[in-house]
Image (cartoon, rainbow over all chains, first blue to last red; front, side):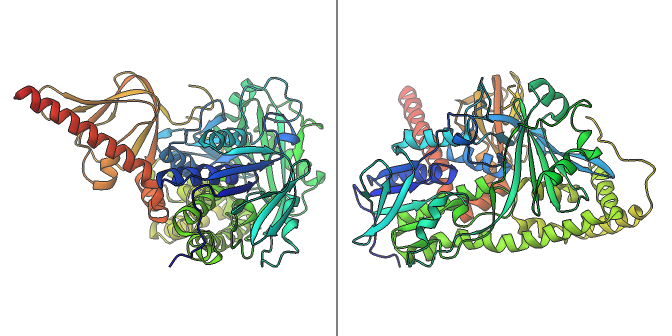
Length: 450
Length: 124
């Protein structure tokens, strides 16, 4: 049973945060309301200007749009144009000290998008691409949402309704509030003293840096591949280099990432062979150390309130934008079709969130296994050998490649990755290659060129 | 193809979907146009011309039967495949994802009805 707390014609919705979660939510809630013949007013509060390069217009993220999300957005009628996608990715290269291997997308199609969340890194003078967040925000605006440029100073409750105040404007009362600020926003602190039961998500720090290489060098050295690294460097869990227009985005995940760890990674021979021989990392390159979602928020909803995207429930390590899409869609569906009371979100919105949370637990287990593999040279050799051999087989028989593909790209739920590892051929192939991996190869396995 | 262009380019006249073949994906046209041909008889019958934003191949996803028509590129076409498995899993989690597909299919039925009425009027 749905509650009696519902939106009606003329109801006002405030969305705090104009990143993907806020824009998706606004877009979907207005589309669904239109289908139902319901007229809603949506205000999106966003302090950033996505047309300005550098930190003022950036939401700090690696900027990968997963294969699944690209497909789902196309199904929704949202096409990501080439002016927003800086590089269509059709493969990934897994680099380890024992060698490198390339895994292609099915159909050899560019199904993963590399984007800049903002207009581009600081210092950019000639912007050839548009901001991804700015593009999504413009879609929400085209759908009828109003953009309120400004930082939200305070959120209070008046007669059971949320009231939003910016520094310059008058307080505005709404019928419903969607929080979509991500994990890096100070706005979440506004909820600390409210007796709503909301506890922000747990997070960890990452490192992201944009190195200028020029379009030709990006094409020549990185191509249309995402480069992932499993290296035995103390404190480093995982790293990736993503080609984007004129830049290479370096993303690192690990414990207490500092300059020493970044230098150790960039100076590793395996990483150096990806870049031109004379390349030196620029000291002044645009970089940040944003928080990354680790574990879901507690009670990410209340009467007339929902938390979507990273400030609510997201996916572990991967596909944060895909998770923003899912939670935004689930929240919009609850709001339009069910109601805006606490029990409506518990019953409908949380189904999608709980599915992700359960999946994240499996993801955490899988990453622990990967961590163990990373520590032992013979297992790294075995995995690499297995993937390299699989590239000569047809798509469905590339079992290890599919497992790694889904893990690194976030294309499938971790549950599916986990189930794949129980395939008898997978287990047999893994044991065989691990045994062979015990004997050291004479040389590092190079990438097979197409 | 621009570096940021997603999907795959099909050149003029290239067959993207072959009638009678099995399929496990549908296609969204991102750029260009395609023709849909019924090839059961000696002379192929053009059923429709589809443009940017249209999709095709969805019948094989929902019915699990062989492709009912051939789809060929008219000029250069950029299209994105949408996997059956991904789509059906997401629709089971979020049925509203099928809204647009239903709208498009409903629109096609409406167009077919119009054509049927026109054909019958001519034959009378």
